[in-house]
Image (cartoon, rainbow over the protein chains, first blue to last red):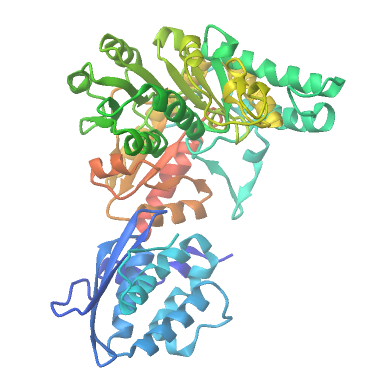
Length: 148
Length: 414
């Protein structure tokens, strides 16, 4: 059986307590709101997109350790990446947390800390909320996105 | 550290636990500590057996066949109506309408009584405590008819404010819909007084009894409420069962809300004559075996005795409140003067979802989230909370395990 420490790895606990990029960039060009009706958590993601590249990204909102750490690590990870690259990272991340990949994709780097989520299926939505919201922002969808 | 008080001599919780097969299982190799009865209670052997016996020996559709089995099933099913009448101390069995759950009960009253008795400008008074199931049906009616919804405030501790409630009542008030017991705060509302004041203003009163009925002795005649809604699965009965009590003269004046088989006297393509109450409100084949199981649950609860249950749960609440209060980072949510054994809390800045996961790994099952009462959570300034709720089978040792698991959360996220 997996242990709690497999889920709450040090890097996750650290980012949940001291989230990076928890701010709204003044020159954001894209934004979206995400919501998890199950727990009432909500998040807003803001992106400054220049020439198809994420120049800056930040988020606001409240949530559990998993969702906040995921948003924090996500923003760290995709800064400087193209829209296509960030989508590919999300896809690899999604495959990892839902247990579809045996081993985390090498490109996931620090995000591999979320590998333990796959043994806690009810927490997958917490780990992916920020990512779904980022996709909505990049695609310019106006409606708030929901994990339900 | 507080020591576990001895269990009441009159109430043998070990024997009660032995009646619930599921409680002997483990989760993650640890003994299950089930503290989520307010969401849905576990089932005693008597209920499980009653359902199995129905399917194995006495099953057929009810109110339909002329053959032996159909008659047996109908008799067993209708006997539960009488048990529910007695449980709630209603006047007559025809005042009991079977539904699938509390939510359906509220919708029945909103769509049948509400839609036929209310008009634009009429006012419905709700309380801050209401579960979504006692909010949304009235909002749907508001959007359809233009009725106005008013909300009784509460104080910081979670007490119902009778004085504020009285100020909201006026000749425009046509219905007060209020819970008997808050599913988040455990607050027991002063229903008798609420009803007296509403009736003086000429309004009817619906009481959501989903949380109260398994915990308190309910007497609808003493309360004098017009509607009382209960759900079977929280009363140790099967899911998919429940009942609405309504005064006979009110039911008589209500149109059917769902049409179909079983609720008619005669149908032609030109017109339909509806059945008498309560059958007029029971279209289609009901949850026959479940309702028969509900009858066994009512027998079981009455066998333990509501007063004994109240005493047992009050002792658990008292002890749990004391033990959790020993932990510095714990903030209790809801400390009303009149409370049932529902204890919500938060641990420092730790998100309830994370608390729930840690507690789960300790074998402790609690509910985390907004508890289907988002307006109440907004009023409290909370997104979510952890809720431990106690039932007939919980012990002081369960409270100790909860306490220790909460300490573990505190250490883990310190």
